Figure 1 (cartoon, rainbow, N blue to C red):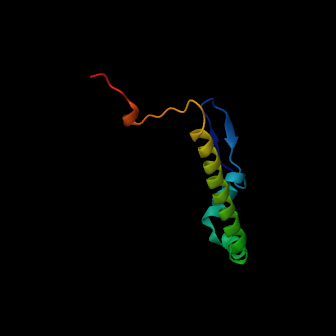
Figure 2 (figure 1 turned 60 degrees about the horizontal axis):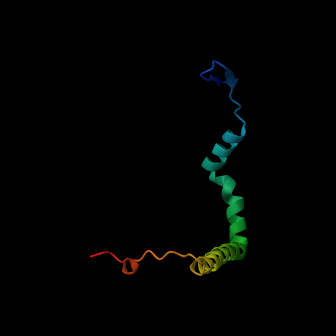
Figure 3 (figure 1 turned 120 degrees about the vertical axis):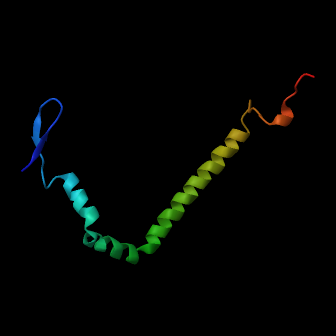
Length: 87
């Protein structure tokens, strides 16, 4: 096993089967994703439903809270037409 030492001169061993190594092996081995792609092909409708639900939730949140901000008292209008400059 190999290791490394940090700036405080504390040396540690590197675990070849650690979580970061497993993640790197999963990313660079496309055979691991064959099960995921099969699942996505079988349940495409569930993925579409989840995406549409997320879009509906986000757009309804913007719609509801956008209406609340427009009707709040003390709402400041910063358009140029409302500014009266002395002549």
